[in-house]
Length: 248
Image 1 (cartoon, rainbow, N blue to C red):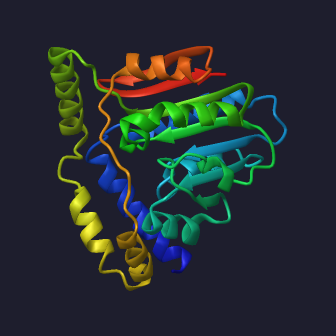
Image 2: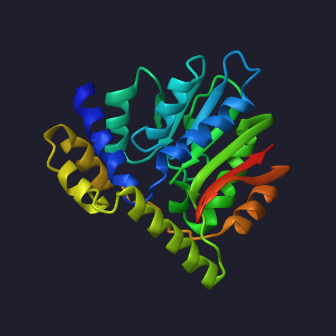
């Protein structure tokens, strides 16, 4: 796949994702703010994107911090094909499954990681794997290194959960993203792209260990502290759309 075609598909992906996350670009910007602050004194920072998908966050970080080495990891061959075809000049992408123990062995990192980032990805992990991924990420980070996770972290109190969702639904209406292409339509259209045929064939062979972990901030904080992070807190929030930061 040529770079222009890949980037067009990723732009369409971003537009589709905004249907569900109206403030997605603001979330990206906030994550970038945290990364920039953490690596302010690093000459050549190393940033790892967990569940990078087609590279939406990783490329934004790479453009904001041109001296950084950015490594993205994902296991979806379709999204990785788009990422590698469109943005290999900015980010090194690695095919590895976070749901499998020892996934970090495939990364071939040049040294300790300064910041690990993730957005709208870790909730796909099975419940029994999220804590292990946090622990494995902590082992990759340097002392003082930081994990920045942007995701929908649902409150376990039913009324608060409902009100958080209402806030996000109202926000989506205000910014006009409710008519954006949806998830299913994007995947159906991508499956008709000839340059992605091989990637879709590979995707069909893989049996992803996906979950739909709908945990709130408190559960994530508990898992992160158990994984070895000393400080955990929220730096940005809109409804249940949260940027959670953990410091090793």
